[in-house]
Length: 473
Ligand code: GLU
Ligand code: MG
Picture (spheres, helix red, strand yellow):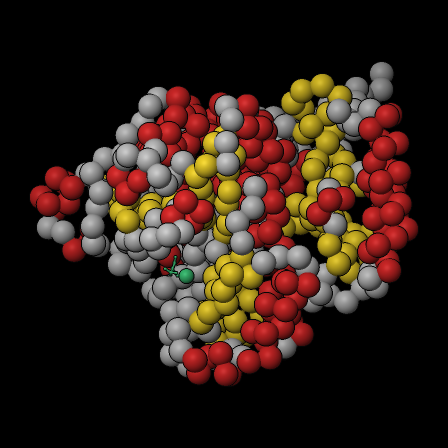
């Protein structure tokens, strides 16, 4: 008896049928032509796994047409890879069987400014039958975006990227610059590098809002313009790969890890988000706190309520909890406040005169070990649940909750978010909102990776965790 073919878990009907494949192949020809005219000969097809690591298959540009129609093969086992490339398993996903098709998104195909001769494209993952793979994080973000759109809601998002530029020597991080926090000295020290990072991002079609020196040793930050949820997650990935490439050309490395070194300020991956209806920002011009509309407030309240579980998605590694300490601007309390950098949700109203376009909420407790597609999809799921339930925000928290005496803190309503990965994972396990949104195969694999990583580092010191994850994302 031959072994029956393994069918990978899928969602919905066959979408990549013969007609669609033919259309995609036709479209790929001119795209390959444009990439090649811009000097590319190879294309990296990229996706992000449940450990937050960008994995890739690469092809010569001449193969793009075939890849656009039929995809490139890759095992589903990567969905249960851990941060150290160890492998766990889960109920629906894991083991050596099955094969997925990585199908490049031609609309996002980009010539990489920091890697001459290379193009890049994010992929959606399909089963061999041409159905959407249930574990595909990018498809999850798109599905949640679609659910919001069905209710007439549009989302705008952007992920701030913080990183530490440097090298490693005898297991310790050595910063590429020595100037003070936010100091012009760092801009001078890294003059060519900073300009090249920003220039490369702009040549790749991204809008650079800011580049600035940050607080920790060698730490820098770039923020780019807001986009739809899937595009914003793509941008977050592209920004990091670009910084990584430009860093290599300058002889150092970029650490996007939550904790470059234990006991210091870490790298955040703050998410800015606004929600719109009929071209109107629901976080401004209303009658709620600071002009929030009822729907805008409910969306924010949904995220606030789900934050302990969302931490497992947005701060998914053991190392994340080395960063999440009070009074480090990482927003470790479940509360909100206008321009409060110690609240997990900072309401950014913008200046008078620009609030209609600028108002957004910033989720501060997340980092860059997170899969940006899972972050985008999960935030939407939580926000939509808030709207469904008519959620209201509790009283605002002003100042640093860590400064409050115990009784005052209890009375303020601000609660400490999970303080370890197992604690956050337990919250996620109980989240009916996120389980239903992700679906069992993705949710199960994601949880398995969290458990696997908690086990991997059980008993490791903070220094060991930081050293072993410093360069992984
Ligand atoms: N590096 C801080 C963090 O861990 C954030 C600093 C800031 O407010 O930009 O999130
Ligand atoms: Mg920052």
